[in-house]
Length: 266
Image 1 (cartoon, rainbow, N blue to C red):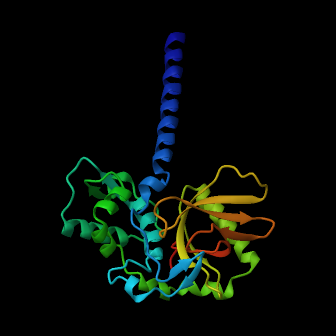
Image 2: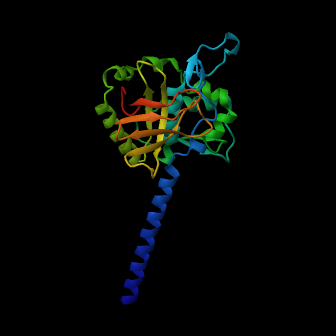
Image 3: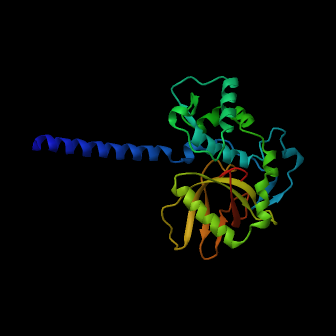
């Protein structure tokens, strides 16, 4: 009797350990990775920038096929691929027509919907991840993830004129942390309205585990203008404000953040 009981307990602990291990593996597999889950190409800016200050491009430098004004589209679609797509690298790639149809089918999923189970996801054969596919089939991907111009007419853009106080930004900071804590992604609208040193969309995917300064939260960001490396967004509890990393296209410092694609009409 004791021997059988001991074997049962041992089997139970072994099963529990395996369940925990598999759960952790699932969580790890679900994590957003910059080197895997972002586009290989960049959203090009309409203006030329020098130390973050915009100026009109010279006509000779403007290309008819320039891929610009797609920061909202790229941020949204990166989240959709993470939630609704599955890649099968060992299978043969689709032809252009079939691949285009699958990309369009994926973008029709509501960006705020819950992630699909693996067996219900849209399959993209021939590539190991979004980074590889968007590098190999760049133009086709660009043509089928959506137009950029509708982002200028989003109803939720009006928030920048009415909800610009520190209280609203504190609520946004709390919401951001809650979204990331649930393992989800936060697509953000960044603006400095009415000055417009930045008017842009990015995908915030991770809160850094530690910060050298108390009261400062640092976040990793996928910025469609910068496909090479993650960028950093910072929250200061003292200033009750966000700030964004300086680069060639932004002077750096204070920005206001608004969540987009987190729910309908947002």
